[in-house]
Amino acid sequence: MPGVKCYLGDITKDKKPKTGDMNDLVIMSVIIGTPKSMFDSNPVLRNNRIEYARHYGYNYCEMQDETIALHSRAPQWDKVPLLARMVGHYNYVVLMDGDMLLGNTCVSFRHLIGSMGNADILLSEDLDFAPTPINTGVAIFKSGAFTKTMFSEEIHDKSLVNGLRHMWPFEQGAFVRFSQRFPNQFCRPDPGRFEEANVETNHFHWAEPGPQCKVIVHSLGPHFQQFFAQWQKGAMFVHFTGPNIDQGNKYGQQANALQSDSRMCHAGDPACHCDADYGR
Image 1 (cartoon, rainbow, N blue to C red):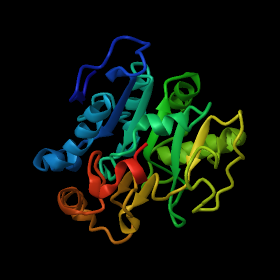
Image 2: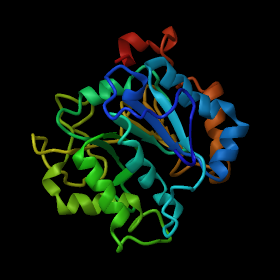
Image 3: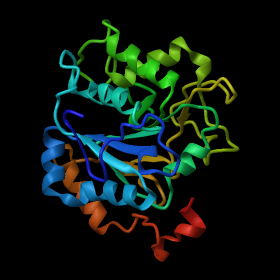
């Protein structure tokens, strides 16, 4: 695929890969400009994703140039055409922003997917003061009609244009607008399926869990996504954004965290008690 580099295998041409195959699931990141140069000069950042994907039998790919980008829109939209193309080649596509890392590699994506029930998408909430209540820094997308329709509408909607902030009408805001059009399909997690599902950080009133739910909006917390200033041991995703971040050197902070921070949890590391506390 133009502009996309995969590190653990070629993009499959099989439209129906089998569960357990590498092509069942792919982890995707958009690494263009500063993120690419920092990933190239700090291999530990890329290796965090590659080692996790290899451990669980997934693929890992990066969008490294704007060949397939929406050139009439701001760079924050680059992930949308990428996702729209990749869902046709994998059963599940996991999106991770470049300024994130896997803090807890004891949890598999298959564990999270098994908790999604009939939903097609798993998103995360954002901080209370954020412009939108959804944060798309990490998300899981099932290849299906609902996901493809959402991406198609975001790509072809002429009212979605450039903006100056990471809010309306960038892709996070487009997800919020979609939730306003179909409010019953954006749901809070089922407490019986997800840890910390009863914690709502930004008090946005998502629908109750149910068979109509197509998008689960997970609360921030140690078992899913946390921002760097809040980072606790056991958090699966750590997002290097928000307060207390040196924006000019956040990739350096990522690299330092990966190399030396005791809060990192690695599969097989007895000090992290993966099997007992964090393993799934």
